[in-house]
Amino acid sequence: MPLIFATYNIQFGLGQDGTFDTGRIADAVSDADIICFQEVVQNWPRDDYEDQAASIAERLNLFYVFGSSFNVDGSFRDENGKVVNRRRTFGNMVASRWPITASRTLHLRKKPSPGVFDLQRCAVEAIVDIPSGPIRVYSTHLAHQAPSHRMPQVEALREYIFRAPYEGGPIDGPHPLPPESAFDWTEGLEFVPAPHSAILAGDLNCRPTSEEYAHLCGRPDSKRGRTRHYDQLVDSWVAAGNDEEGVSTIYQRNGDFKIDHVLTTDDLAQKVTRSWVATDETASDHYPVFVEFDF
Image (cartoon, rainbow, N blue to C red; front, side, top):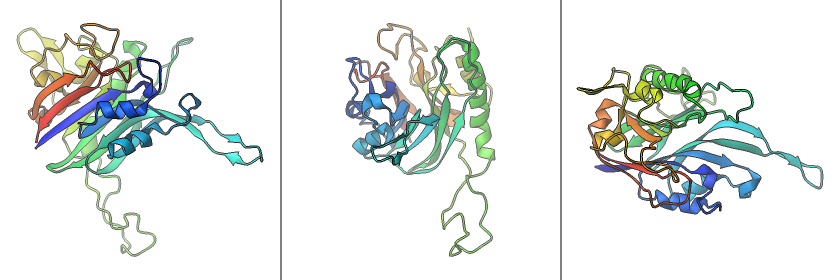
């Protein structure tokens, strides 16, 4: 079974022409079966308080989960004094053609530098029930300032991804009370531990020459290529037969500026058939990255 995967930093729907349009964001990745989105927002005035996660999922007719890096107040009182509760969020999203059975959000370490613009970052975990069996998908967006900001984040991600299968499901074991009981948390649902197979995708804000990339994918060796440990990932771009560099995933940066990546566990790397960057898309300052798997 072929499966098309995509990752896309959408810059909160702001295109290269300076206009907001989540419709064209969705259209740019409409051929994909599973998509990781970054820089998704909800309830900000600059784009008319749109819930971008809901809008994109509705246009694509996909299941989705959204995880917020932060949640700040956007509430107000109307002319009658009634409180209108509104939360402004910024985060990542996973959308899928198949059901997402469970999800968690991991908030990544933030090391602020005085006087430097910074944002809280997160990774959204989704257990996607594809026909061949469940896989884990992580949508993430790392700090943009410097390697010293990103390294604690990639360390946490690497440890989290390889620890997750041993942590059980979101709810473990049968509830002691029968399913018809009002106290039964499961309500008849069955949860399984996170599967080993995993994909980490998103805007990592680092190139393949970086220390952060080496921590995730292994150090380069002139004779053996990347030397990986059991708890490191494979770059699907390379698994598809491409050189690590020679392409940009962000416009106005020519050549070697690949900072959006799709990294996989060993078993999924063997299923990669091709990968490409859609450099003709203009709906964001980043280009969507696609990977085709054969399941």
